[in-house]
Image 1 (tube, each protein chain N blue to C red):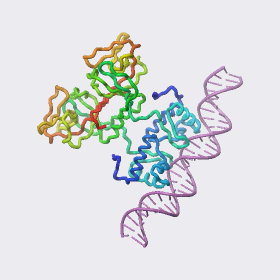
Image 2 (cartoon, rainbow over the protein chains, first blue to last red):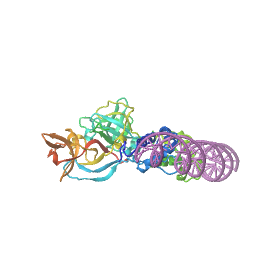
Image 3 (tube, helix red, strand yellow):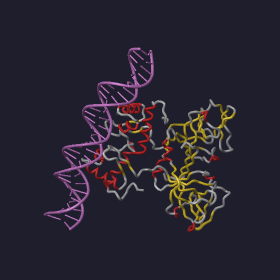
Image 4 (tube, each protein chain N blue to C red):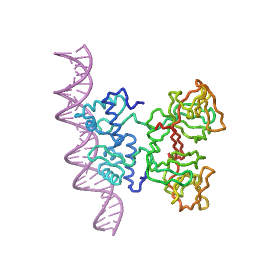
Length: 209
Length: 209
DNA sequence: TGTATTAGAGTACATTTGTTTTAATGAAGT
DNA sequence: ACTTCATTAAAACAAATGTACTCTAATACA
């Protein structure tokens, strides 16, 4: 792995590399050599070619020869977080091992329409959803396909949005909390607008990011 | 927002759109019209032009006219998951509102060295870390900088790895569970190897991804 | 059936773009 | 001061590429 400011690179190479990453992040495609030339304040493409060649030799980028705008940043293949094994939260059982698979969080972001909500309150505490957690939701298009026990965010018009277990029983809808202190909400199907179905819980335990 | 299979698109347009997204994900740059032509099994660029024009009119893609391989997928601004507001997990308080900010999960992936562990057991259940959860950890370089109350994964040589609260008191290390059924583990600082500090909890609630 | 519309094939052209070559400039070292 | 090397400029070229145009085939529709 390489750090953003790599001492293997000259200043000119590093400046170009940074600019390329910025450009590709913004535009989702590779810049042309003449664009880089202009961005670096140069008047001929040769220096850019030289720097690109060095960046390629050092493993930072690659491209398809002869093809326009086919650069790739090889460093930024961040497909997932390595799962290093299991950790015991009970006794001392599992061994810390090598990478088993990848937790592909970025896959989540690829899915369309997913949105997140911040949780207020502790009505879902027994489902391990705490105050302040982020919940990732998938929009519900067909409320008839909801199974009992699914955690949904539902809007009761005139009242607000809430995160609860979905239970359908005898033509009635019950929104049940995962906390005995809260009473189930009983509604007719027409009264409630389901917004999303719970996909994942995300809790930031640090200010690191 | 658009769904992956959008009825606004013809089959041909949808097939092309899917292929483009796949290509751009893999290569980090835009394909050329002739590449798309070949991928779609066509023998002239005109149909691709037509489909691209339609995709652009419907807001799926954009490009810089005349420039080679400058497509952008306007839909796939994968910078984060939109946070649509707060949801009450207590009463019915908060209103479902527009996007407030973005939950930038991908930022996490940018940070190097972060790894994930699968949690076994329920010793951290009171910290809302459940069996089967993924915990994202940051490696610990300096164990002296650990604050009491930090959740760490620690390896006790000869025993195994565990996820616990870190508490240092009187020269001793205590690894405390978030579950009264488990007794604290008392150790000397030399006996324990700290692997990571908890950054985030990730729980998949669906097989969607 | 006949017409209108759309999609695709084929072709051609101008621009963009990567690449090469040569010369000029500047810095560093002897 | 001289050489040597790397960097830049400049120009030219060929390939890749976007775009426009015409023609044909397929399809939909009345």
